[in-house]
Structure formats: C-alpha cells, structure tokens
Length: 270
Ligand code: GLN
Image (tube, rainbow, N blue to C red; front, side, top):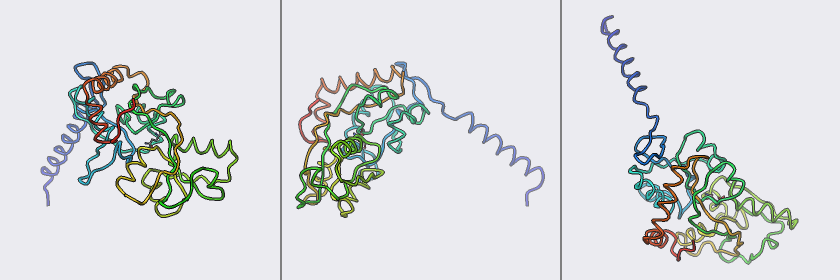
C-alpha cells in the first residue's frame, strides 16, 4: 500500500506529465519558405485507400504509388517528410478534411471538377484520366445499354458514379446502379459477380488487371476528359505554389516521366 505522502507524490508526477503532454502538443508551424503545416516537420496528406496505382499499401504495409511519389517531391522541397492519413473520400472532396486541419494536402487520384473547385484549391493538373467499364473476362458486354436489367457497380462519391448516374438518367436505362464505399469493395463485388459490370477510372482497372491477370477485362471506355489535381485548403497559396513548383520541376527534369513509367506504365499524357 502507498503511504499518503507517496500517493501525493505520484499524483503530482502524473499532473506534471499531463501538463508536459499538453505543452508539447504539436500545433504545427511554418517552413523556412513560409508554408504553413499542421504538424511540424511533416506534410500531412489525406488520401482514401486503396487506389492503386496512385496510393495503396505494399506488402510491408507502406503506402506507395504515383501520388505518394509526387507528394514526396513536395515534402522534400519543403524540407519535411510526408505523413499519410487514410480517410473517406467524401471528407476529402468536400473540403472538410482540409478545412478542419486534418491534413495539409489531399492526394487521392482526385479529378478536378467545378463543384470541387468551390471548396478546394487545386494544383495544376498532373494526370489525364477517363472512365472505364470493367467486366469479368468472357462477358460479352460492350455498352451500358447491354446492362439492361442488371446491376452496375460504381464507387460512392466519385466522378465515375456521377457519370453513370447521369447516363442512366439521360438515356433512361433500366440499370441498377450500386455504389460501393471504396475501390476494393467495388472490385470484390465485380470479381464475385455481385454486379454485372463496374465503372471506375481507367488506370485503376489497368492496375487491377496487371495484378490479377485474366480475371477482369476493360469492356468499354468513356472519354470524360478528366484531369487529376492535388488539393489544398482554400486560400493556402503558399503550399499551392510549392506543389506547382515541385510538379513543374519534376516535369522538366524527367522525374515525372520516370515516376509515370514506374507506377502507370505508359507514356505521360499531361
Ligand atoms: N477520380 C475519381 C474522382 O475524383 C476517383 C477518385 C478516387 O476514388 N480516389 O472522383
């Protein structure tokens, strides 16, 4: 049993530790080049996993991909290291995560749209994408019309979901659109025949096919003319400038092309 004096001493030590903890809480800072960061020494990135080849966990559990490599260039330029936060896409695209200070930057294979521009400041475009319809290999589907009476999977909150819902409404298609919470759930639904076909950005299907040869095929492409951008909190001009400068430098010195070849495979189009 502790004596009264010991008890008081233990309590006092606990209070001191708690106060020290408070004092040490990281409220961020500003880099030498004037970029505000929510955590000292880190560029905190919000993303939504998995979205290979842009961001996904490797065998060792490390988040890697094209977006990760590009944001690493920004972090290096700022003299800090990238810290990645996995969070639902809705909070990213709505601007909530950046506004609330969860992250400094969003990198999520995210398409630049007019609606999103109202709540986010986008970098220069860094990737061109289209939508694509994937089916289990051997299925004879080539058009949305051929999915009449069937289920079509999409990923919730994405431009692919918007595109398909608009097509189904405009063309009055008898297709049941089913939204999944992330890419992994959508791909699982497709490969287990819960849906007849699935729509997502073309590069993620190409990556899935590379990783799972022979299982799934791209049946059709929809040239939506999308471009990806990284996003910062509205008004964070200092960080946006650093991002655009890092992208421009990577494009002019061949780093972008090298990373593109590593993660995407084909020649860069932007
Ligand atoms: N490019 C798509 C969009 O911005 C999908 C992004 C994602 O799922 N990470 O909606």
